Length: 261
Image (cartoon, rainbow, N blue to C red; front, side, top):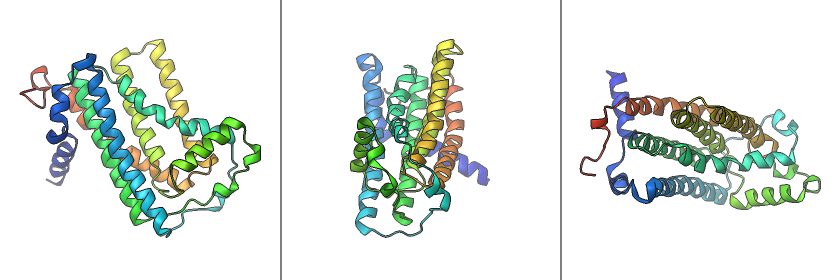
């Protein structure tokens, strides 16, 4: 009975939210299907940016660390300037997710379920940022004189974008883990096991590994943040996967969530 209730709750959370997606679904074929992707992107940016930056601003203003997750090894990990590139490459995961999603109704439903799960994971992490704030005070370990011009510019950009709070779980890792799995699923669905798709996915997962390392070598996060971020990403994907599989298994006549659209 408990399992059934959890399954029902999961389905309700990841089924398309009518108040948000009704109009988007009606417009899904406009501009060759690209308008749908644009609207999903806008939704995703809002539900990620508002909780993240809102909690970051509040935590920085309060300036109170609830618990410091730093361990000795965090300080011993060296700064590697060029790792700022794979760190920033997270922001390529979002358009790659949209582009890799095949333009048919079945996969559009999967995309909606995926972005809803990502938004819930973001809100979940943001609650931790507010309830258990931790300042990441390792930026002073960066030797700016050792950085090249482009490296220094990217570091400055990152430091201007947010304050050194919102430590754990790392959204960088939670998002990239979830999105890497979603991209893999949709690349395989759209392109099969072609040489091009295998090469692309190899690059994708190498980038994910580099990204995991980069949050430590750029002094943006602690090891604890990495582990908890992986945990959130893993749980989020495991929650979403049965829903995605059920969408894929739907008969064609039952695909449309909004029958009048």
